[in-house]
Length: 106
Image 1: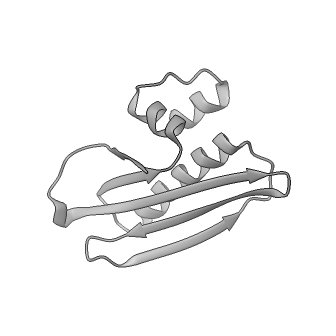
Image 2: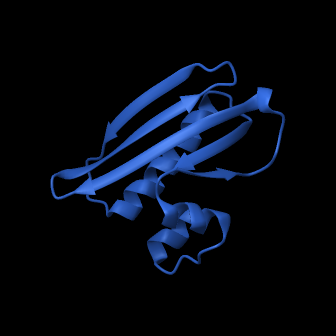
């Protein structure tokens, strides 16, 4: 899984966010694991009530996970995703071309 970090900080303050989104003909859903600096895990599974492409599900879970980590009072977050496209777009290595992907990045 690739990691995304906004800034470097000491390891004792870092929260970890692991996300995975999925979309099939049966629907879309996501999994989230937030790990505190004290190694306490918060685990979530969410099923969407709307249609989403696989990339949209991957972005949705990243945004939701970041919001949840913020609510848990995380100040330094290292996010991991198995979506190379999303990771590379967030890092700025790949350019987002679809309007929906550009909106997620903003």
